[in-house]
Image 1 (cartoon, rainbow, N blue to C red):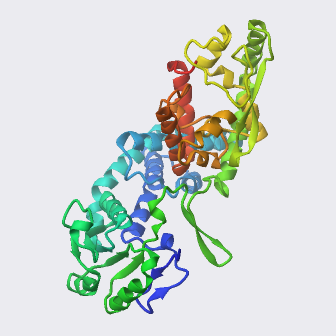
Image 2 (image 1 turned 180 degrees about the vertical axis):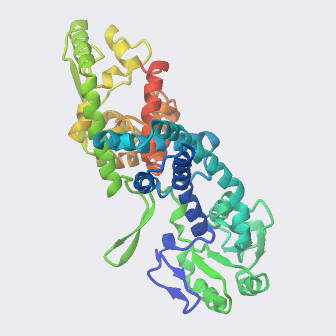
Image 3 (image 1 turned 90 degrees about the vertical axis):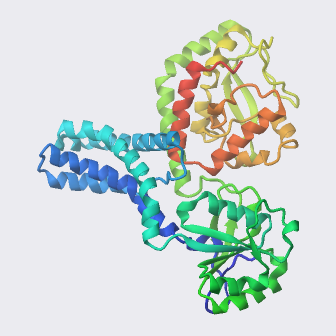
Length: 473
């Protein structure tokens, strides 16, 4: 597959990746949105400085630089629901404020600011961020319009890829693109279109573009039609429209898609882990700090649970079971034994309600997830993460990988003690294939959309559900 975009001067320009193309309206839009969070926080901080008449400007300047570096670029929330926006802002600010509090206490710099400024800032900053994001949604269309947006676009190729691209354009008006329609050589009856957005055939593209002042042309054509593409590009040399080639990788399911390079050769990541580079360092550092802190805090609980397991039934305190870890490698996962048996063979039945194998103490441990606590040791060992797809027994993996498309993709990251599927209702037994499919769908959604805020949200949701939910047994 040739990843090319086209130049207005000289036809095809090699080594210009599709992912790096300038999306009209996108650059301006992203610039404004990236400033929403840092500016909201800074305006709140300096507003409180003037309100309480504190004249220590140098201290606020230093704090302002630190806060800007922690909050820029801001989170994109334009497509989020109100609930999602509130969650992202609150958990994002929780992380930033926790770092600031730790830094302030460690250095004593918090004493240089009035208490009323700091306490008011802690709640006013996220409120200002939310208000600014909602104001941004209202005012941004007018800003784009004042700068000549939306730009007029056409899609050449009314195939699955072209319709997928059109749907994305229609679903994201903030990109500043308005789709006029499609061009295709096939008759409209063969295109299976739900509307009459077909404009004409390929030979009519150039004339239409010039007559209607089209700004953007997207070529959604398979590379098998390369001679036709080159002919079309030749005819467009007399226009001023920007032309983009749309690679057909987007008809498949993408996990962490991004542009990369091997030497000077551009390549596209279609399925990859979100924890590469700095993200991997942040994820591992958070796992080590949190798991070590939690193990120290819950050490009395661990001792009590271990004693109860020992007294409840004969057998080992810790149950070890083989699971699939990162990249499908086998790992040994630790749990407090909750059953009268320790099964780790080719056929391991899932625990069911009223399962005779579950001991009396084990039932309590499973409902409260206390049996999972030894897995924090697995996290320290680097075999697991606090948040990630739950590991399944090897026997279950071998069965479901044959039944569910994309099942093994969940192993692009370390398995977790809790995960996105678990906080969305898929904790405990998955007695049907549909339930397991739903769990995998949530796992893959986590891989696509990972962020530190999402991890923090999942952890808080898990703590809440442990006290509320009784779906595990």
